[in-house]
Amino acid sequence: MRRTAVLGLTGALIAGTVVAAVPQTAVAGGTAHGREHHVNAEDIGVRIAAARAADAGIDWAACPADWGIAAPVQCGWVTVPVDYAKPYGAKIRIAVDRIGSTGTAAERQGALIYNPGGPGGSGMRFPLRVTTKNPIWAATAKAYDFVGFDPRGVGHSAPISCADPQEFVKAPKADPVPDNEADKRAERKLAAEYAEGCKERTGAAMLAQMTTPNTARDLDVVRAALGERKLNYLGVSYGTYLGAVYATLFPGHVRRMVVDSVVNPARDQIWYQNNLDQDVAFQGRWDDWKAWVAKYDSVYHIGSTPAKVQAQWERLRATAKAHPIGGLVGPAELLGLFQSAPYYDSSWATVAGVWSKYLAGDTQALVDAAAPDLSDTAGNIASENGNAVYTAVECTDSPWPRDWRTWDRDNSRLHAKYPFLTWANAWLNLPCATWGVPQRKPVDVRTGNGLPRVMIVQSTRDAATPYSGAVELHRRFKGSLMITEKDAGSHGVTGLVNPCINDRVTGYLVTGSLDRHDVTCTPHAAPVPPTS
Image (cartoon, rainbow, N blue to C red):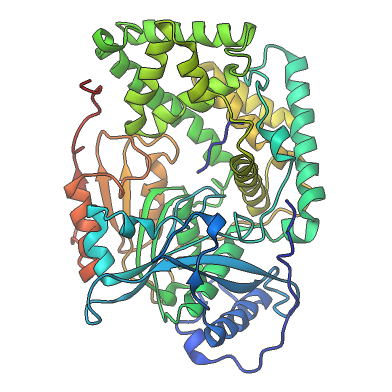
């Protein structure tokens, strides 16, 4: 799930066209997911769209120069309905890219499609894992074309917007931890204005269709456009929920699926409770990092005990609140930098190093790491767009509490024990309380007819997607294999070096092999400070 510190459709809507019969090759496996599923207008619409895409294919060409994706990666478009209940109505184009498999024709097994999370993340850099010769993916690259895409609303796929990008990134922002009721009222006002901005800048028609089920339907249309009867899929973070929803709606279309760092898919978790659980998990991983910093006090000189490190953090926040560091870095910007440590073990030394330099008198190091680059117009547009999609999908996917007293009660209680992220997370999601389009009922994620065994990968101390989410998906997907990285906390495990995990992921994708029983792996290596 995405955490963010804190353009209109640009001609992406195109006229609908008429399609005749629905070829069976486009709908192999059907969309029924079991006893509770009934065919509806959206089921029919996705079959029509998939048939049309299968017939059209993808016109692959060199990627546009300003996309920053060089040859031999190719780019193209897949046309999908805005509303699958109206397959002949307004359309948008989904941006896709690919690099061909590196093996022989006999070794090739089709396309592997990737989603990195979010909601709001772009998968368009996935093929670069091949061009950069990433050894973890070398064997898999022999078997598959690596395919990335921008989900609806993201990047090049009819990008949505909720605020002026330059205003969105300006700093310093208000301290996310409120001092009083006036601070809370100010944040509530900002959240309501942001929700209204989403409706005004994106349009209610598009905003109402920014859902995970629709993105899953888009994914099935992309599958058909690629000429694939079944999907091979790798999803990380929010990408696990997208994969789970896809597997529920299209169980017979799944060939192999790996989900890594899992969102709890239970209906009563999507999305309000998941975000509350995230606050608890972030605090736990923050505490892990503080203990590590204290262990290496001879390197960083921040504090020799976790309590002393925490005291330094509170002192740093107070300093930034009283006088933003470099005029740009207040408590909100500090959190934007420091939350990367609970997210990824690879950030532990980086964040500690920046903090250590600041304490030694190097203020600029902290400003460079934490302050937004107001001159980076393209980056600021991407940042605002990513946050807009995050908000739109989570707010539209499911009902959220409308009564402020519920938010205030729940977050006040959590903040008392888990203060690191709680209020910042609340304000990020509060636009959902005044959302301007209907909020849907989440999909009932579960095994359906024809769904093969799914591989689930998770670290036990993941902050962004707590371990309980993987356990819940494992329970719902009968026959799935659970690979647990015990006493580790990185978010996104499959891209890291741990042979216990890497070898199994590669074996599954390349040969279909899966252990008969769940597997527990130990961390391959603990974070250490740089040697120089």
